Image (cartoon, rainbow, N blue to C red; front, side, top):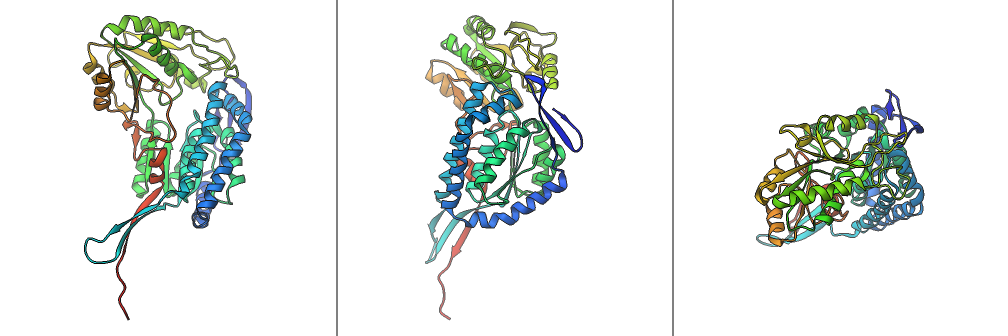
Length: 460
């Protein structure tokens, strides 16, 4: 992806000579104008009623399903997502819209007795106004959907600023949404940092997913304006493996979490912590799992690890592994794109960037711990706190991990990757700011709670 001040080019990461298009950047003034149009449309959308909003979101779900093959192929071509994962993302996207299509019928408040005397006390949740959404390229359909759907369901209007690398996907999704929604209710604002800054400076509620540096700036800007903001900023996720775990199954899960979609997920596994006697068998099993993992053309249904999103991303991967001891390296692929071999590193020096920074590539460090307590301390030792996977047959150990790991999500005997769209999603520490995404948590984030007091009337 290359940019200028007014336009940017989206390229196929599996074949950079394949250009999806040159797209004009909206420009900061156009973003501000889009927010004003959305603000003008919002009262009518909120007042349209539960049935109208539910019907519109259901229509989006149906249109996504009808275009499933096209959308999956577009995700493969624009962001290099393996076709099996792309199809799953499209199915998940449709499911998200269907799930939130029921939300307009949910209760929006409660009735309480007065502390003394007669009258009524009410609480009611109301939409903020215009939701400004800034989304990444790695889930080009699902992440915009899991932000936009709850915002729209609760009566907000939406302006979406997608990552430049995923503009073609965002444009196709926007076509589906604008066909189903009234004018001004959903607006796409393509571009880069200028457009994102303009959106944060004007929207009534802000949701961001992306890098820590940009997320911190978004949080500061939104907080200074006094508007609600949430930011999901990635992780440096650990997999803890106990000696009593099913080592072969754990290795398969962890290999997929390291190298699936070339490690380009905020929930990917970056550190593998083997406890006690698990070290040797896990090293062998994980090395074998990575060596046999399918690397190649993302359009091939067998592919697990496709290309990295850009040449810069591949360079970052190469710098991260430079000079380190590789326990195992998966197969390389001689395509024209930006491919990298899945890699397991051991004997990582203390203070190395691999133990403190998210590489966003198919690489992980194998570490060792004497016991569960030390493994938990190691997992907690980084600034990030998104997700940890724990592999064990011992329920007591699993419960200990649940109580002592300081990550927003913990997955037992499952890969660190993979989330359920109807449950809260988000991390602790530097991985996230503000309320959780998805599920009922999203409905609360995109609304504000008001308390009403209805005192008895008096005769004139």
